[in-house]
Image (cartoon, rainbow, N blue to C red; front, side):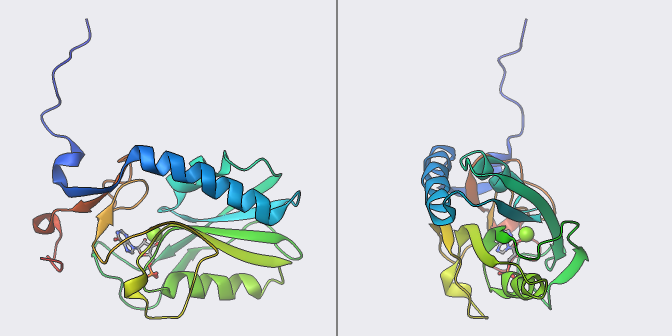
Length: 193
Ligand code: IMP
Ligand code: MG
């Protein structure tokens, strides 16, 4: 017989609050998918997901878009186990698909200082795509250091460190189905207390 006992530890215990519920994400993805489909018409889309953060969001969002899609991933690092980004984003793994004359949709988990997306958009533009649009699940508008707006935004959120649905702290919590604020004492160093 299956045990019905609660596990001793749930990752949600580490959250101060849930900011975006699983149900809210599901609802928003349907609308975002429709907005993206309307913007591209019948065009094929070359999707570039910034991994690891955009993996869960991209996987669910792409299933809301009926267009033909080519998928590639790019790996950028800027955080290294801390809650604030520092330094210039590093390109760790580059594209494998040819994007010249293609309609590119770049997907990331969160738009924070704007450094990551502006660096990546500039790299992509050098390869002469037909168009480049950007889509993020979350937008922390108040934290921008570089001027940047995404074309498609899931949710505007306040200036708090969040985890879940792809977003991590030191590679943990990505598999939470919701987005929540990590308890300040679990952030090392504690910068948001
Ligand atoms: P930006 O370059 O400062 O805009 O940061 C974008 C990247 O920072 C995202 O791809 C995330 O990996 C990371 N990031 C920014 N804010 C958070 C957060 O609250 N939780 C987890 N990761 C974050
Ligand atoms: Mg990331």
